[in-house]
Length: 524
Image: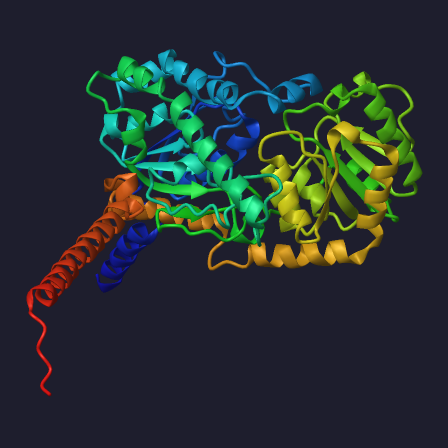
């Protein structure tokens, strides 16, 4: 009898201590069709599912295999796929496009997807068996999806696959200081001179004002697809309970952050025991003089680069032999003839496993943040050929630390490529600097995934107000203390003005007495 009681107590202890035994139901909203963005979000949702939470994930990237506690709510059939589908001409168009065009594409157009059947079902007939306890939303430019938190009456956690965007500071009550938080390509996370700080201030506030102005139309989408009483997105942004940001101060620089903003850079990097395919492993193992890995991410196709540029790349790769080159190419048949014999192409590369290989000397990349973080994790120096948006800054942050070289994609010559490869492959300082950066990047109380789960569960336990800054209830002029400074200046003005009046009155009285008092006669 006593042994049965002990077993019962032990069983009750186990089921109450198992992570997620009292799991929540969580809705993940990731409608933007960016594969590199979703790589981070998928890891978060799977990690929550591993904890025993029941997750429903709306995205354009349904899982290929079932996963316990993970349910896909796919909108892939309604949204075009852009994996390996962005050519060089489109890159030039995007890099030269206005902020308005980019926000329309990644924000306002995505809000139009609220009319799709899976989303309409969530809005009009949300599940109640059980109901949702939390909503997780990508915070990029489609902030209309924040309305699901208010609609379902649950806290909202934001995820962003980029560093903190300028416009997100004010609604979450986060301090913004353009003196040392750069948003310009020629800025520095360590120090900016006067003209850089001036330019950075102007550019940062331009981006903030443009983001606010060009997303105002989302208010109409929110009220159209939810209900007329739903507040606008500016108010919905202020209701965020937590924002998890894909950055880390070792790479992206030190900046002030409230407790509601948590850096989880490198979250997507899976440090598992997955092995390379046998043929690829054999080829890398035999690359005794080293190997350069080349990839421009999951969207941009290198074979669509101008033929002149590709021939310069061919010439460079031929000159660096016997160093080998592994190049990700979506469609190798589209490449011009003449590929050097030391180059191996593949339409799919297990990037993390390749970067972990001891013979990899450098990573030639467009500078996507995910790839940069993977290279930093495994200490691989970078040769960056940034194309648009945040890519130049990502490469520059590493170049400033002596761990990368940056090239211009519009002026990519064989000599420049060869010089960069020789520098990175033969100058040990690049590897040493990247290893030091890697050590700082990985040295944390908890790894990025554990940190993410901890803070999401913190919101589940303590509610949406637990980390919210009091600044979200203040206007911009109250946060910047303009009312206080104005009051102090007004008080000083009144004080000095009153003192002036008193002194003037005293002086006038003294002069008046001197004029009316008759002079005294001198005695003989």
